[in-house]
Length: 315
Image 1 (cartoon, one colour):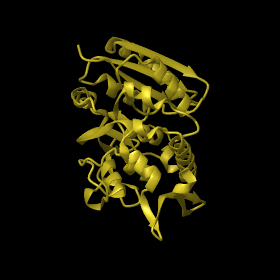
Image 2 (spheres, one colour):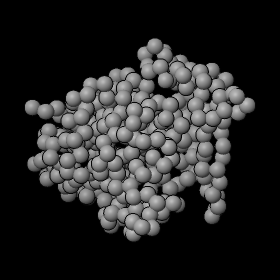
Image 3 (cartoon, rainbow, N blue to C red):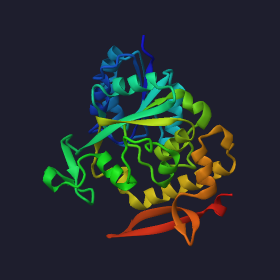
Image 4 (tube, rainbow, N blue to C red):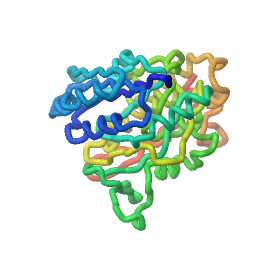
């Protein structure tokens, strides 16, 4: 029998979308799945919408856990979800997104045959608030005409920012993630990686960024070049809160720098030590720096703040 896979959802204020998310898990061709959902204090009817799906989930999955709680935030909720898991692999999905029916099976087939990889992910199509496939212009506004689009998928945008081909060995490498997180949504992860990286912390509030940085120290990641995930783009996306996201990015990087100062570099890939000792991405007068752009908005105006992490700041 194939391994048990845990699908975990931290649900929050997605009454319009959460049932579509759950249904996309029910529709998976991979059979041996447990579903664990925690409603993190939603102020709308998200919890009621989840409960309406409980019988269908119990009929479909090997194990089902639904809980609701006072709002505790993403990191604490994810740690609680992980503590409930019994699967050897797990899949995280937001309560407003959806996955294709063969996603878990495809990603599992790769990871189960490649033990040196800890994460596998595919491309993301973009969907609007009504679940219609759409695209982005250069400012990431929704367009429906491909001829007017700058980015047809989320990975088109991520590759443009990262400036390398995701089908190459650079995908998921520590130095590339440190410059900017480029891992798309919809990833399956080998649970045993948590034995090495520990758990989420509010000190690193960009939980995906923190997670990918830690995994890239110890294992490889694989990008499958096909649409396996539907990433919803709507007015309430957290990523659109630019000032908040810039602050979260700064906090996560500061926490990562603390980790680096106490890290045993003999236990991780050599590239991690190279980043620590030499920096990445930028040189000023021949001196290496770690270079970060923080974007934020005040009123109707956009600003960019540039932060240089001199290597001496890490030590």
